[in-house]
Length: 56
Image (cartoon, rainbow, N blue to C red; front, side, top):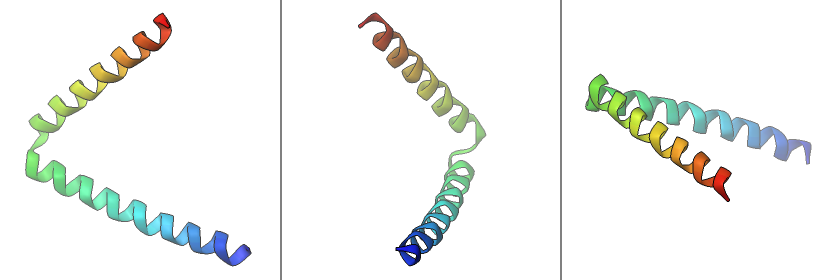
């Protein structure tokens, strides 16, 4: 059981490291202006979802 927890931690660390590299690569390919637009769209969607949840 302890070995399983240790293995999961190692796997999560490698996965997160790989995800950060992918994010950096995507940002470099898209450019900063495109990334800012994407962040604004995601923020608007998040705000809209929160408002919809409050009205229920």
